[in-house]
Amino acid sequence: MNSGHPTPSSFRQPEKHDPLGNLVVGADSPAAYQHLLRTHSDDPLRVFIAHMDHPGFHGVRWLNQRVLTIKWHGGSPVKHLNGARVWLADAEGEIGDGVLRRVTLNTLRYGVDTAEVHLATELFSNHRPAADELFGGFKFRKPVWKSGSLLYTKAADDLIGAFCIVATALEAFGKRSAKTSPPFIGLLTRGEEVGFIGAIGHFELGWLQAARRPLICVSLEASRTLPGAIVGQGPVVRLGDRRTLFESGGTQLLTELAEKILPKKYQRRVMDGGTCEGTAATAFGFPTIALTVPLGNYHNQGFEGGPDCRAPQGPAPEFVHLDDVEGQRKLCLALLRAKLPWTDPMKKMRGRLQKNYRDYRSHL
Image 1: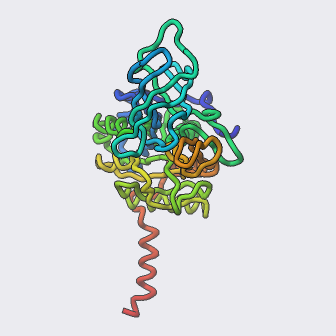
Image 2 (image 1 turned 120 degrees about the vertical axis):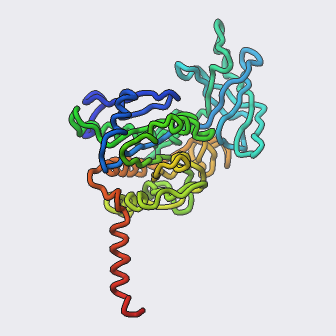
Image 3 (image 1 turned 135 degrees about the vertical axis):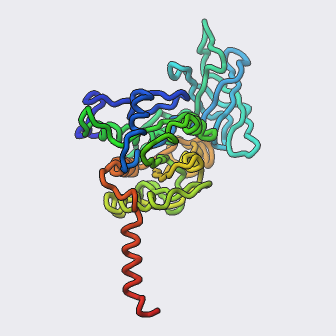
């Protein structure tokens, strides 16, 4: 973030965990959240949603001082797994590393099911933590590094969405007085990779359903690169995912913003390489739009290769283009502008269609 952006210490940025452990940005208490939802306004509350988890493993049982059996959650590479490096952490942070052995794939064969982690060294000479207190994922040269305009990391999905929410909050709250709040809530969720568990739990609370003002959910992701959604060609206005198409009027409004703010530097596509929390929001009846950044080596699978990729479809760091991330951040901030045509987002399109009718009706 450049020096022109507000810093966290320059204002009070409210945040609070909900009962599911999701992090709510933009309200420092349930009462403040409810106040935003009860505010009488035609301007919808924008609920930006991204997830904080990434595919990885939890410990199951110690076989001996240096061998831990594990259960994998979410997608993963499916080849070249034996001997792959992994990191290991507890609630306080990373504590060591090891390699995978005796790997089995899940029944659908889209990722690891179980394996053993063989520690590089004996980490626990005195007190060894319980196996289920440990977790981890694939290890690369660094947790994150840059190469030119590309950002490589163990977990761009969904670090990028989470970053865009926090960056948007920093700017939005930095530009307001302490007595006013932007029409913004950021929901940073848990357990997305195993079925949107955090988002579903938040929706089940019923808080959003009780809103007295319009809502628009904005799903933010880093999604597998596809034809027409290429790394470095701009953020993607996501028309839908593998399961769902998103709200057409809001998507049109988002497209027109992208045309204005990022001319020829954005993309527009159904991103059906996976499913996102936009589907969960849609299933719960909330109008939803979505943005995503094209993602190389989705779920650490070496589709595109590059540095630290063991072999095709083997473990590899995910990567994104920094310009795509910056474009998504700009579009998030633009969605908070006042007087956007949420009540009639198709007005411009309808005007073009009516002009076509006037031009050609004499030929009927």
